[in-house]
Amino acid sequence: MIHDPFDRPTAKSGMLIRKPVADVFEAFINPDVTTRFWFTHSSGRLEAGQHREWRWDMYDVKVPVWVKLIDPHRKIVIEWGEGQEKTTAEWTFKTLAQGTYVEIINYGFQGTPDEIMNQVADSTGGFHLVLAGLKAYLEHNIRLNLIADRFPAGLQEGQ
Image (cartoon, rainbow, N blue to C red):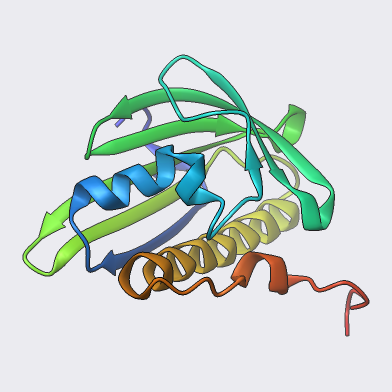
């Protein structure tokens, strides 16, 4: 682990994906796969030491990504966001008899205690959707559009 994230509020999500670790790992480093369940565009494959940009066209949002670590079939570590919104996310992959268990933690949130707790809740929920979308796609070849449908056009905040 690059950093002990548990000294501050941390978003955490995990799920069993019933596929080999090579397939699950590839889904996160290869944007040709990742764009089928998470973001809509990436400036390239994740490689340690490289800078990438991820885009969600449906929300007109883009995020800079710095790839800190790629340990094939074991771990991915990135920093993403800018300024006070910059955080660290880690993916850990564990091979089980049934498939691959993926755990994602996100930490380094900044702001007031209430702002941090809201960021942790948003990140946790977002990564739950990412993992559910990945599971449906890899196990059943179904694109659930969970990220695109989370905040549909025309929905007012608070409704």
